[in-house]
Length: 345
Image (tube, rainbow, N blue to C red; front, side, top):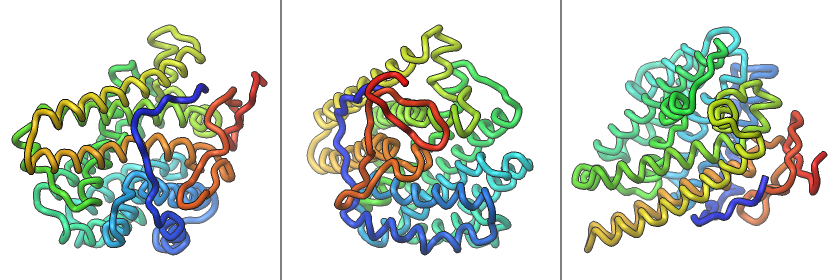
């Protein structure tokens, strides 16, 4: 793993230690009915969801940070339920359906722990969201659920994808749109009218964002997927070997290159968009694009520290941000924790 030359700037929420402490407060509320291995897995995931919010939404005030942190936790915990008995027992469909129902009708009593938690988060957010943003965020969450269902079926059946099939599936299951729209909510801005006026510009932002999330996620979760999850086939690392004939090292190197290239694309796109707008709209676009940048850069920051990817103790709290023990070197593909060495093992 070589160091990635980062083009986008990231920052953690200045009250990260405060929000990190909420993991303990929310554990019983969310996971009280679970036990054993399922609970142990998702306790780590819950805390990581708060870390994600702290690095992707560093400018949120207390009220909105509370909301986006809970929404982030709900999405990330649902994602990691595929590593629990809910997948092996065939109950993931119920979780996914209840999660979508929590957004579509948050006033109804939900039947699952994740549905109840998401309904609580959604009820709190709805009064503070304009109609356009609420509709987009609900649609993005439903798309995430549908694509995750495809991924769940593939994991259960052992189905593999070509690169194009995989990217089509990941466009939804990466939840890139959810991340962007929660970003709008976090800074109290609604870009619905701007999106109607400039659809192609926003489509370009979306394409870059989806690609960046996929490249970052697949690169930095491969050790976990290979050793712990048994699902390394559903990864751009794997498809580059099987579809493109690369070696494992070449596949990893190419993903590093693609992350850098995509960040340059986003920087160039931002400059073109701001050059093409003026006045109040330009200022709104500047604020919006800055938040999208935080989400993209935060995804990389988080993916280098997350306990669910690298194991307990791999990162530490330094001031008001989490930092990894190391990000470059020879990565040992061993279970439990990411370990870097100066030379091949």
